[in-house]
Amino acid sequence: MDREWNDSQPIYRQIHDRVVAMILDGVLGEGDPLPSVRNVAAEYRVNPLTVMKGYEQLADEGLVEKRRGLGLFINAGAKDLLLHAERQRFLAEQWPQIQATIQRLGLTAKDLLAPSPKGEG
Figure 1: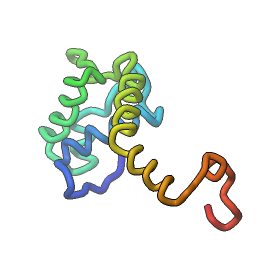
Figure 2: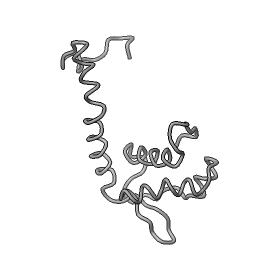
Figure 3: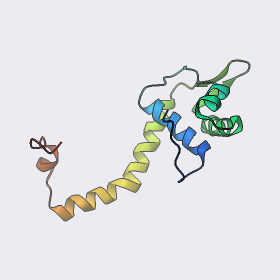
Figure 4: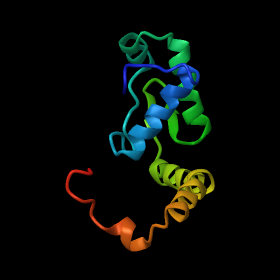
């Protein structure tokens, strides 16, 4: 997890989003435990209640499960659930803007699939 926090959203939400990113990136897999609330709070210098609130959101979304006395664990199917939601959000929110830019610039599918010229990334 990144050690820096931004002011654009509450820290508990940023903790939630970072765990989601770790699941999507394969850093955390099905059945893996989440880092303990105490460890995250100490390492990132945030209130344990803030960490717990971020974790509770993950549980409310069905991404993690609480195992009494053991902690929180990534649920089976969490990555697939997230991929579906993220794809839908991308198609609804980001793709229309990208598509408009592609049309405005007159780009073709061939342009988009061609390797970038040397020196341009």
